[in-house]
Image (cartoon, rainbow, N blue to C red):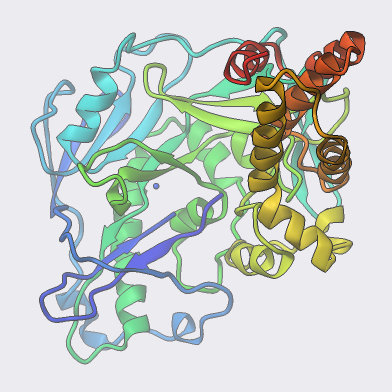
Length: 425
């Protein structure tokens, strides 16, 4: 669900690297001969999207001398000492919860996963089977919907990705080629690696993968890369000492997860667990049966113009009420609600430490922020729960414990204890 991007050198000393947003099954992993070492001074710039004129043109006749088919050799499935691309199936042996094809950057990353505490763990199971189901949606293709009422914080579903692939790949530096031609050739090269990874899947998994939406059919992305750029969830597997390195990041493609549509008012949270190698989705507010699940493809703490610009590479025009009814006031709220919630908490806490109830003006500001966040669809975000607990404390110090308890009950159970302790209630 995050767009692809390009690492490009701006000086001769810098090596150019492009990046995306990610033998048959059971034969053991294979390793590419392509070197994956990353220069520390690489610079990130976006891949092209939309209608790219040069994508429609044939590459120069001499492109094949700069393009090479992937070469690989078979290695033992437990190998973690390597610094090239490896195609591997995980977990091995299979445990009944499915498997993922993983195009992994280097041994350090693979070691982090296979040596994670509890690995290989089974994926967690939700309270009921099929709590999320796929349905057709006008103007959206398909979407994921709840089949029952779900409480805040509940696991809705978890799954192993169909494919996990790097968000980074080397950019070929070809003299005489335009920047766009170099991008086109590099995407063609990376598509060849992705084709190998896809070919390792079962026929049913390949079919499920290729049935996913592709909003990158006119920018030169191959069919596999286009699907990844449209649907991939970014996960950080920490394969580099630098936490900001692009090669810490992978794109995970889930069969169900990739059916989740975008909204700037998300009602779910996503986590990735190394031990079970699974994508996990939780409700961030109470959900009713039949509600569509939404995840934000962009950063939500920005104004509508910035959100639209970030969504453009996905081919998404958001029609949530926050975008359709955006105002300068709603933009300001999204930019400031985190700081405002924290500020109000600190002001209330200062009163409580002196044995006083919350200042009436501060309390009124809390109630207004609560209403504004609900109206803007931000009531599933963590600062909202901090606000609820602060309001609860204010009611308790005002001698109205029942009202305070009602606010506490609106927080997920696993959040209540932590917040109450941290807020000294």
